[in-house]
Length: 392
Image (cartoon, rainbow, N blue to C red; front, side):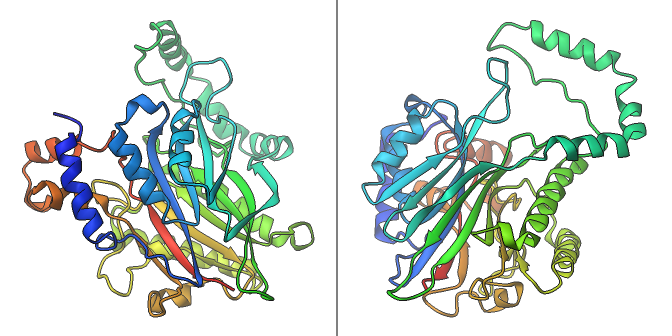
């Protein structure tokens, strides 16, 4: 049976209610605010999930004060259901569909934010992030020979594309891809919204431009890194435009599909890259990705996919406000109740304990298949990750 039954949900709900924080959900602590990111797999029609699942997702999401959601589908019925169940303290803002041209075949997604209006206020800005026409033309001209080498032998790709387009609607295989040697545009445009996080009376708020991103997964590591590098380049360049940025701190929340399956080797590579970002900012701003570091209470970095093998999802700070956490703060995260701190809500372990499955490392292939298929579509194949900040 692929989905969770009512009896199984009863066990899960009972264990969850007994101690909702045991599996990494952040406590509501007065004087702090919690930012989070959650890729909720294909959040679309209400009928695709049971009432128990909607209640569970809404309960989890209500622990976060500013939540970025990826994989919100063009059909907003499910998103509205989730948002409504969270209660009257929350408001939302959603992007238009991205990832597919209107009227053409493909899977379009929206980037969504849900926020606690008692602590978080909307700013004026809401915009996609894109590379403009002049930047695109510069790239095409600078790399024209490399691009031409890929485009010239295109007969095989065009034949595959024609075959794909001729398949009956709803029965199409995966669309063929053409791997380009350089970045041209995002597969899904990141969505940027300005927010003000208010604190105690007569204090200076946090002014954040929150970027919600779902970057390319792709078949190639190079494709993934192209999109990540392009978004980093945009953010760094934007941070340098001090006079035109009225919400000067950026926080990146999303499924970056970051290549981080081997923390021992990948962390060094990514850390060196981030150090170059900080050097490029020449002390004017700090770049920090806490989830690249093992939490002080853990030996290994958090995993964010349901299979607990990858850290695709990230939260990163690009800050000029010295109250926001820098990489030097990561070693002491969680030492103060109001933050800064960070973590992941591991509902996979909650489900495993409630349903009395063996530890994942001890499961055979058939047991793993039975376990994960119960919830990877019904709930999600990603875990929510969060960062706690002390309120001003």
